[in-house]
Image 1 (tube, rainbow, N blue to C red):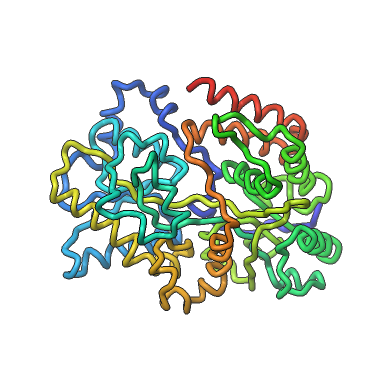
Image 2: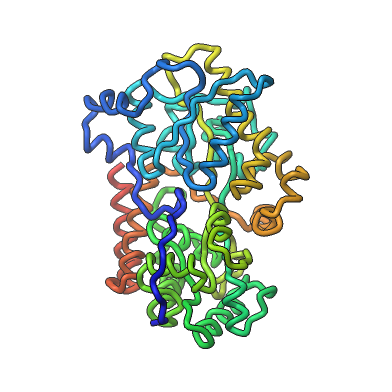
Length: 436
């Protein structure tokens, strides 16, 4: 075990995936259908009780401040003639509140939704195929909002994983900080040098939901997948076993990463970890941490012939509502258009997410920003080179993902062997979809 002194803990990003979200099924089990209207009334918005567009976001921290500033600018600008009432719902409560508001008949006019959630909400969203369309956006990203040929959501961004690395730790370990660890061989070389030549951990990565997405990313690079098209578990294979064994060995064989994810998070933010898998949003955190960093492709799995990154997208939806008149609907559509087009370059350069708008991607404002040089050019390169996959939008998405990340978390904690992870996760995923 590395000798790491515990320091001040920095906050996790709002989308870290380490807490469990509330799904539609859990809300129904906990309250019963009769209680949904009452819960919806507790969300802070009832029907058309306020003038303007009711907009629910889940952004906190750095990207929350950027979204707040963008909305404030729209509200203050005479050219927009809009009033947007932005309400930030804590991200681990967002879907529970959104669902109950939609079922209770009191939804917001616009809300943030991850593309993986689309199947669970598809029957309660206003299509915008004719009003906005796919053309202004990166094709692969925009497809995340399409269900059965209808555009139900408009992409604000995509937020893939990358491999951040601490250039100061690299130098201390005798490594070239300008030679990024973007292949399995280079990753191994760097990790071994860090543990041999410093008192730091070599590596850290996610717990919770994103733990399962790391597995998806590594497995896809070896030609495998988590689910079949019929929602059958597909990872009880040689490649699936190799990926889970690799993730086990990061902690329990090589001792590159700590057993406790909290220890790794604290050490990373003190500048005492060499490399970390994180998403686009993480740029604000490493800037605050203050060490010199680099960002490269997370292509770290041995024998992966087609390495990829994995990333979801923040989408904007318009929930269906019998209380919304045509003028309010038009204002909601304009809100979606402004945030995903005119303000999209700013969302990239200031919040760190990869913009979905083609115009934003090509804009001088984005291309000349520090964020483009530090992270977004690498993320965009993976999207352009077909090295990007999106978690599929399936029914029961939160439930089946939990059946994978719980045993992975147990394995990291030292409580489960790799073979048992595969067996437990396979059975859990199968039971999840059998209960549909």
